[in-house]
Image (cartoon, rainbow, N blue to C red; front, top):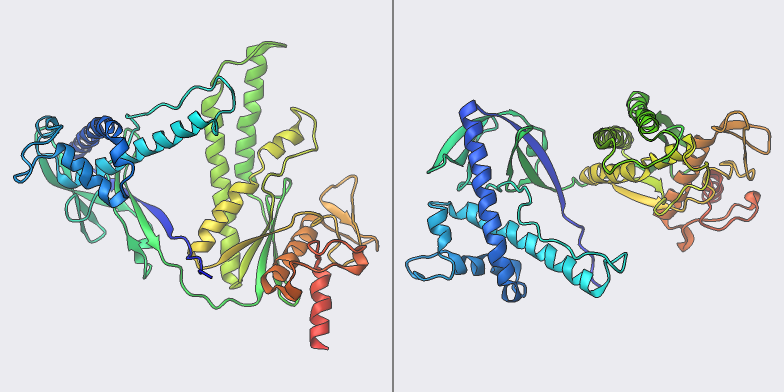
Length: 451
């Protein structure tokens, strides 16, 4: 039986640059000529794709160079104009452009093949995909040939003046800390330059540290009223930490902008009519950025809690494919469900926690909040305050905390693989399925183990 190797962890840092006015002009010229070369190469690669597509990635770049780059041993090539039109174009910039163009053509051919076979057609009259040769790419820099790093205060980059290629040193005004972590390997950065940004996009191959975690997990209940409810539970069923994470200020900023969309729509349409395509596109784009920021804030705090308690895993409910059934169409509740960040928070948390050497697991979501953590049965929600749950014993408890406790129990049972099953049923909760474990099941098993 082959052991599956863990996937490589690649993370990207942004190193801000502080160029002069002259350097900004040089960066603009460099990006412009690089994109021209990429457009030129896309046509060549598409023409010869039948013989290039069957080669391995390591063989494709030399094969493309043999078509257009003349040397002393190969004076005659099929496409010699590149050396005349793009005079003195550096070889490593050329190979970077070839790699990008191969990726563009390969993606197009795959999408076109899926369209021809009908795999990607949602309608009978669906149009074929389009090959975009002008994709707004940025040059990748190879160490020693395209850039030279002088400490972490400045970087020397080979740039185009309009007629020649020269070296220029630009100040690094800001960076993150991934370059300081032992084991992280810096890969080839890209020069990102436009009217809004000027920085290096620096990827790192991250090697997670080896951990000796304690016997506890961090369970996260993602909700609507409270963004995330976190509970830290030991393997014996003891709750050692609880926390509510709810960046209300950012949520209010987002909701205020979304509410302005409905006001503008009513003024535009009146009582009937249709909105034009792209209506309030900038507002929606801003709200999307706010959602990303909220997700990062919540995920960062979850990972911090897991690091503080040296947890073995972070446990989430498996909400993939979940769709809201409550709330009328166009109601505020339906809009809140639509803006639920369950997938983003889970994905960002996994990215950050995997880099720290931890793991994220998913458990069955059914009846996590509906079953009482003490095994007393199904809870009832308070009619005036839906965030409160009433147990059969009359006890009132926060519904999200109750759910996160049950999520932790299911995660612990899944981790320890007790009795070769994901979970065990609670007799007091009415003989629920084994995957519907509650926190009380950990108490029962722990007492039996001690006995």
